[in-house]
Image (tube, rainbow, N blue to C red; front, side, top):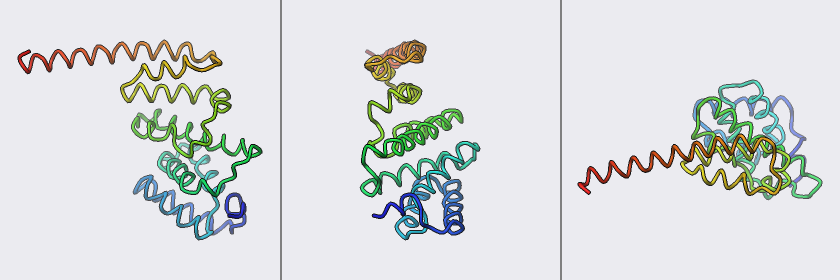
Amino acid sequence: MSLLLIWGGVGCDNTARRLDAAVALAGSAGRAKAETALKADFDAGRITFESAMIRAEELLEADDPAAIPFAGAVLDLAVEIEDQLPSGQEFELFWRRIGRLAYHGAYAAYQARRYDDADALVLAGPKRWQRESYWLAYPNHDILVALSQAHRGDARAGIRRLEGRSVQADEFGPAIESLVEIDRRQLRERLRRRVEAEEESGG
């Protein structure tokens, strides 16, 4: 695959129209439908991956209503075409951008209280961006992953994630304290449900 299909070489007007259509689809029909449209346009040479990623970044920055599902669609597209994306060390910044797209999409979803969407975005995209160097550079993303684990009912996993890092970012301390409190609440809730279940069963 030519790198032109990753970064450039497509008519700007046509690309913009195709991306407009995919954004509208993301807003009306969701992430999966938008990704299908993006993949078809990418395969046909009507859009580049770079153009799709730039559009997702712009939508998130503008707080567009379709930004969250469209970001997810672009990250899903990256998974589908991963074997066509550059993989050399010289492209590390490119992969970090994909990681940051996952972060900003998930953060926007959390801010909007769309927690399930945030969980689905926080580690989205190819695993290639999830390297130790990335986590060291962006501790805020590490914290967001830990909070996602807590939201899914496993705050202890989030605590272990942060405590296990070889370099402890300053932000980790307050985050771990919050996770410890969430873990306590989750434990109390599990105990409450167990007691209620035993009472209902006559135990």
